[in-house]
Image 1: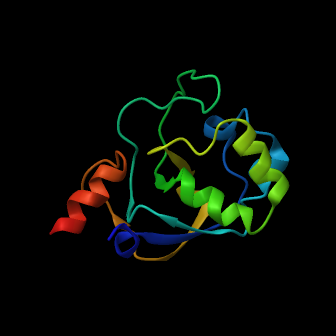
Image 2: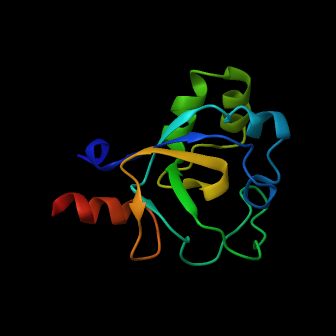
Length: 131
């Protein structure tokens, strides 16, 4: 059911240092050109944003999409096993967590719409899938 509710984006630029800052440039760069399934909304993430590895709060918010980590790693594994291995060694994917890709880093392929609400996590997709 979740698969039918997902959007699709292509990564155009290396993900921003704010969110992916502790992840090496070559690992972040491996996402460029990847087509990823994402939550079907573009918007501003809800709540506080924290760095992936050290947990420090990130100032400022950007508009973008959330990509379930498990799906991001699945797509990345078809492109770059070294980048995938680095992420897996550092405990990714984390169940239920998402990677954030900012609006300027992606091209929307299909099924992503403006979010009238703030994007939170997979529970939003599950709620909409029921209707």
